[in-house]
Length: 312
Image (cartoon, rainbow, N blue to C red; front, side, top):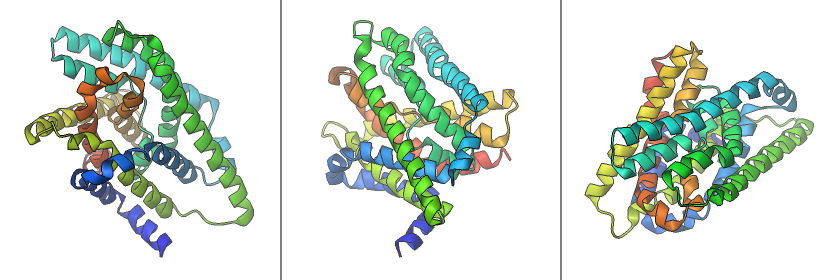
């Protein structure tokens, strides 16, 4: 029964995620309890992503080559350090509102969301490349964030991002290690890991996690007009970064799978990481934006399916 349910969710994963969004909006009483489960959800997503990507340890060895890692490292350097500095320079020169500058720069400087390999795979992209980008982006964050945060908060200590990013990195390494051990043990039992079951489990975990991330929408001082305005801005940033990622991939003449990966990862960044990284006074203006940003991210598999299918 459970396997059948997970398989159904895997086949219809693009519709499961919007259900999580609706639950986050319609179930304010569940926001705080679910918020405490976010670290667990991140670990589960990484564990499931590795199981989905690498059916056995031989495939893992073949997949993780030196050239793959070097190529991913170059992407991380360009898109997580040079790109946010460019975004800050352009938005400051254009004299955009301070909140816009802050949000657009921090999104660009953040690593991919923990569920990015899952989102990429739902859209038939290169999930292993997304996983490498996720791991390297998180590992690079303690260094890449320093010049960005210095520009945004010149009075703040540069060490504020090191601890949470290292915690997330340890979480990633631990999840991948557990998945590798599971795969190794599973080979002895010969149990088939069906892709649709793993996709279904990932979609459910993503849907549960968004309920906690949407908690800011239910604050007493937030009204419908402010939510709609911030939602429009969040959608524009997410869609704009995805379109830019696709355009740059086209300029590099990448294949369809790699183009999908770059587009999805460019727009879906783990800005929620700053909730634990920055002091409350500095993150307060961003809380509603972070909540609204979950909407375009979780609708990416559904709406993005129409867009990315045109690339084929």
